Length: 282
Image 1 (spheres, rainbow, N blue to C red):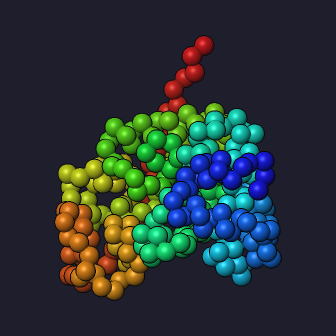
Image 2 (cartoon, rainbow, N blue to C red; image 1 turned 90 degrees about the vertical axis):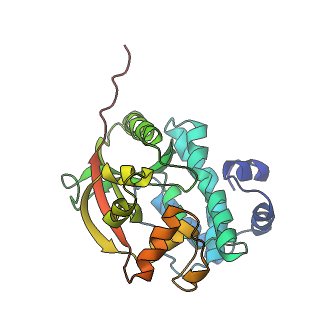
Image 3 (spheres, rainbow, N blue to C red; image 1 turned 45 degrees about the vertical axis):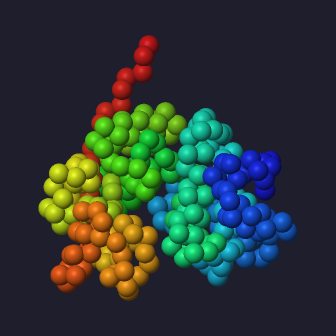
């Protein structure tokens, strides 16, 4: 690790309880070849604004967990070098601890089956701002902007609701944040790829905050993603034993009833224009 004590690292990454014990065990000895390889991959991606997660390249899940732990201080230092406040850096790096807890909830043991998702965090171009996360990338294919322009990919953490006021605040703050800390990468468009943008959901729950969120976006296309709604609603991997899942909320019922009826959940791919940045006071 670089310039940070283990307890401080675990606070930065929001790791505690049994996960802290397991992580400490990984850090107790020097990194082996697989972890070294994963660290080299993370180093090559830092500051390069990748749009996709790193590939496994022969490294194991454990290699990646250890690499994420060891590389997080480097990312934190990178953030600070850009003038980004420590609390903003910590807000996104805390996803490591959150995903460790989700893994334990899903699988019942220590692990990180979402390690690839967290390699985006380690590239230094994704941030949590208010309720949402925003991923600054180049729209090389010109799918929602002029080819080569910059765009903010929107991600939705699980820990909270999507009230219009919270979402409004998040989008407004995001425009100001990226204008301030990445002034040479002007953004005016945000995109979102999510099962929450599947039009079926808004039709079934038209008065929900999820539907209000989806209506913000112009829908560009949909693609099949049969298991996404199940995983993100229930944190259940796969499409087996769905009859054992709860049907206590309207969302849970809608997700499962569509599958019961032979339907297939989709990813909606949409975009929106960001609100204009507020003028800085003189």
